[in-house]
Length: 218
Image (cartoon, rainbow, N blue to C red):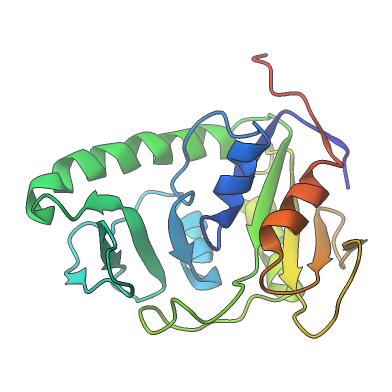
């Protein structure tokens, strides 16, 4: 895995990666997957469509899964992505659609600029850590093989994009004092195994802290 990157971006599957990137001061701007729960199929479809058909705002509001939640939850048409943090429950969600759409338009343009550019970028994907959200979206297992397929798709769609995928995989059946890393069947994909479902914050920070980033403007 390349040890120096000019950008680091979350590929989901949950907002925990974004929180870790913020804590490590590696997140410089917002991107469209930062605060979504996403299945692999949603990610593939978005890349195949060049991030141009990306709508979560015109779907009915869902009841919050926990008492006291301050946000509306919206699900994609295919039930493979969930918006958690974009709509304020203190305001009618219909009044917020335009501003949320404008927010996603800005973030999507950043994705297009990044993928169509040449900046060396680390794309971080966290395997779904538990089943908490899957009453709302379709359960779909992430695998290292799917990460390889994703890398091949990105290479095909964006041949000039200099990227590497760091895939943080869940292994709730083992305990590791230190995460393990290995390249899986593709030079642009590295899998890091974390030790349990409660450890993804610590594990993600531990892995990312080992990588050098040059995030200055070039």
